[in-house]
Length: 208
Ligand code: SF4
Ligand code: SF4
Image 1 (cartoon, rainbow, N blue to C red):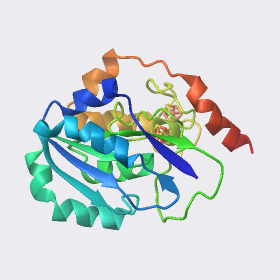
Image 2 (image 1 turned 90 degrees about the vertical axis):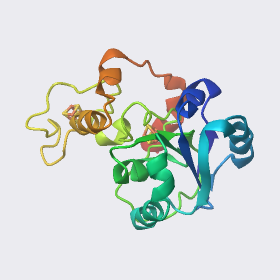
Image 3 (image 1 turned 90 degrees about the horizontal axis):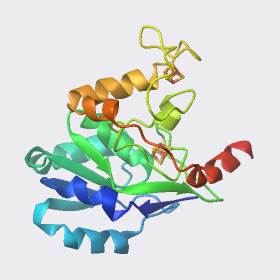
Image 4 (image 1 turned 180 degrees about the horizontal axis):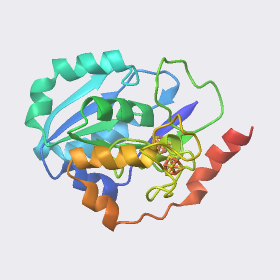
């Protein structure tokens, strides 16, 4: 199983300084969403929220494309889309709305048990400290062979990864996505130190 936890108010509040369209994912039974906590937070941000939708299975790209078309009106009016879901849901919406600022409202944590089944091309290692808000919605843990968090290793060639030449370099993809969102300078000027205590559960999971 996995659980999602509301991000800290310090990280969340700046996401609500412009007009925001909010989506909460209520799809999987295997994912715990802290909905009460989310609602308490959203009530305090009410002045900048254009609309809040509770939708199923954002991890399903077909569903998410349909939602994006259905609610295009709200998306157009908003500066930012904030998603409360696991890391996969945020990655899917970020890809569909790649010119838009899409932010994750939750961190995703691993816990033992059934993971659920969904057809998806995205992966979330449930690392406990979601980086999607800094990387344009592309996960550096799963898109980069070395799970690098602050930029590329320097070994990429023609946009391909040095570890696997069949694979696009995750950090080239992240940079290109941020260029589209005009956010690339933030990435270059700010290095983030990870709290690896939160990452231990994922390492345990991988080694099992
Ligand atoms: S950074 Fe990647 S692995 Fe970590 S929670 Fe976000 S999507 Fe999942
Ligand atoms: S080439 Fe890119 S994807 Fe591959 S390990 Fe280096 S930074 Fe990561």
